[in-house]
Length: 110
Picture 1 (tube, helix red, strand yellow):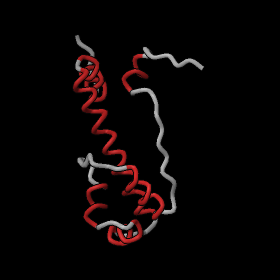
Picture 2 (cartoon, helix red, strand yellow):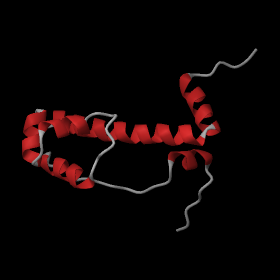
Picture 3 (spheres, helix red, strand yellow):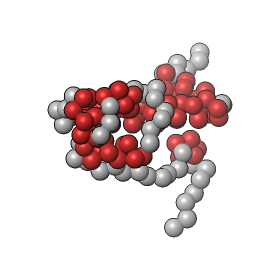
């Protein structure tokens, strides 16, 4: 009898087999994360898209695009203006790709 796998295990196995799929999933997760952070920060601030756009010096349609997980045209300058309009800082970090962390194949030297 074979072991039943949950959805997460199946996706991880497929991503381990297919590096192109792995990169695509990580890219989409990146975009979704940005969209979610902007949306949640805007809601927490009690702002409508129109008000946030005004404060950030952009159009409401731009805020709508930024909050769309399928959008991939993020600029750091715009994200910084949005963060400032929300009274937040923009924090950018560099790190190991998730796949390398899972495999444990990359070791950092201190």
